[in-house]
Image 1 (cartoon, rainbow, N blue to C red):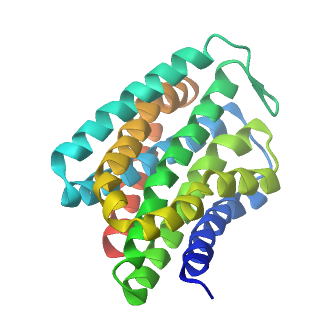
Image 2 (tube, helix red, strand yellow; image 1 turned 90 degrees about the vertical axis):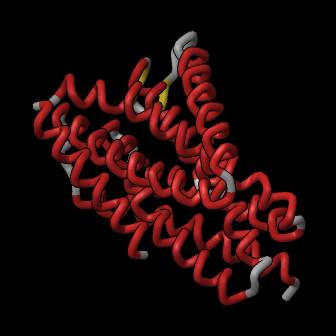
Length: 242
């Protein structure tokens, strides 16, 4: 098999793993306003934890590049939020602010996947052993990211199957970016910290501008804060010991 096809297949594995994050929601039937708040809290913790991991990894390749990428990521989400606010968006049964929130989450997680796809492709430049380890790590790491996406989609009456499909779709940039990153490893390795910083900045601002404000409105603040803290710490530990 051509090496580029091997890289593509590994990238597809990481993307498909994201769909597993929707599995727990197959057992969740009732979705109340409080459940939406708790789901947003869980998604917030997972996204913040993932952001810390991205910053830590990005700074290994370039501190200032990571910071610059993060600033651009924040600006991008704020601009996108303002742009989407001009239109009456519908996503499933959600309309208005709810649909905008779902769209932003998908935009953020898709942007995140570009950086991870580059990481997979660059890893192949170091040999199959390193590539297999990095691919496995990203695939497992993608499961809670799929959970974060599903936590926002499922309370808005999106089916479990569609939650899984949207989760996988958000990770499709991984196989698409892995191949050119493998073929032009030196060029893409230089861009990697910018991409990781961008994804981290986008996720952080998404949490504080969209997800947490809604969660605090619909549930008790101490409970929301506890859920965010626990899932954040769990995600950080998960990435550290993976």
